[in-house]
Image (spheres, helix red, strand yellow):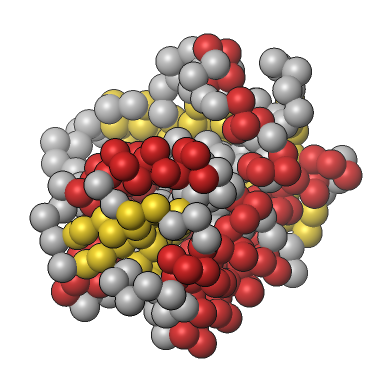
Length: 327
């Protein structure tokens, strides 16, 4: 049995993570901590878990093997360093932290303690994205010249996100820092090392953080990624487009079409694949299974740091109105 503590209900995904772990069968939610004690106490009662108002007290408990971090992004570094130093395995909501320096602090603490770490990258478990990565790795599309990924919803229009979501001190940013993480880590996974980035952020609902954003990223392999995200779009299709020297992949929601010089077909033209890679378990389940069964841990420290490297540079590019070069 894996004993897990939930660290904060700040993030909108926290309740779903708790439900997923409770339905696992071999996981027990032992305790809850929250930077807002009233919220945490109420949640602990709902989960049938203990509430600990003091984080250090919770982390000293021997009946906790791992923690799920859903605290404000601005608190991630301090919370995860404390958890690692207490010998607790860590699952965290993205982003890992607000700066690469903070990610390095977390990584050093995790490695020193010898605990396991996983970040939530759910888009890397889905059939469509796995298929896209497979085509890139197999060179079915030739050399990738342009990648476009769009992820958006209407949360800022219809106000179904909590208002603190737009508090820069807690969240560290707006649409790009949250929803934009998904296209960012997909671009990093598919294209490798970034070379430079520019950003264009907008404030459609006049909140303190951006609600509509786009980044252009050039990679060392000469590919360009267009990363788009929005909290002010109505029923946007989840778009993934890859253009290469020998083929093109177009994904819009559940529609998948590919054309390539390399596909051995009796005709030349667009095809819709009938079989895609199998969907993998969600990262929170993979984390629990890896701890229970001593399996390799997916989506680790380097993955989280690469995402923050892109995000940190994206915000610098926006705030300073310039192109940011990566080292």
